Length: 325
Image (cartoon, rainbow, N blue to C red; front, side, top):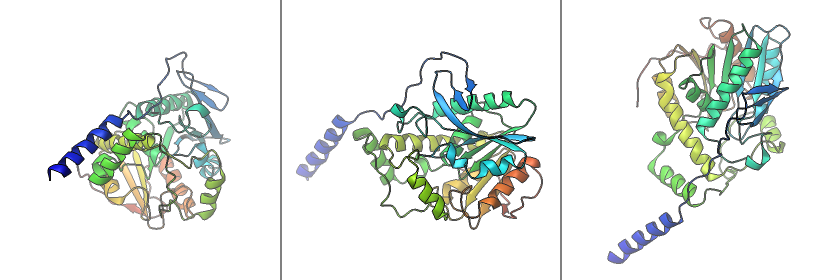
């Protein structure tokens, strides 16, 4: 027993001695006010966030889209034109570290604070450009977590659509996963698994999944310290739920294999802001790109037009406010 105890202590000390701090992008000093340079949003520190823009001829509302993990503005490549044809202009931007942003920093976690700051800046720029029109935010998965954190830190849109928001944070993970991720992120932060060995399907739309696999702007590998940062962001999004104030449309698919149902339902219960919830029996994680995506698009468009009208899908859920920690 003494020998085993000595081994365990020695191994622990070895691990601790090898620990390093998970890396994160450092925000630069403010050099200008945020501004739009064509279809690129330039942040206060000079960071350039390219956008996809789908303009309605006679817009009645505007949407800012916040993409998911390892994606970029193309996450909205299917719904963007559809909304524009229905008098809703659509702006989607690449978040720091993703898509067409600075190649030297791609894959390095930008940090929740920077992501929230960027969303608030992009939102303000779009709002200025479309003065007098209601501006909404649609956040997908990780983008949903960023949106929730921003709503808890001063963002006040006309409404927020949370599409399968990433809320599987530290408190929802089992002890083994927590310790494994913590150790890996601190010992081998640049280790970048692909996740190809996992039998997980984000969507039933195989054509979309194949297109993503061929698009070099979608990241196929993820640094361990980036995963660590994402889990922290998800935890913060979970914690922010009961402090949201803007109207919320919360969308989730019953077949979601990425964000578990248990933390999702707990977060839904904790939201005290005016909310509508739809859970799609044929929906997966990529609700806006699944085979039944137009069902989701129509619900969002209907909610933007009238927050009290029935959702066309008929899949709205009756929910109660249950404060669960």
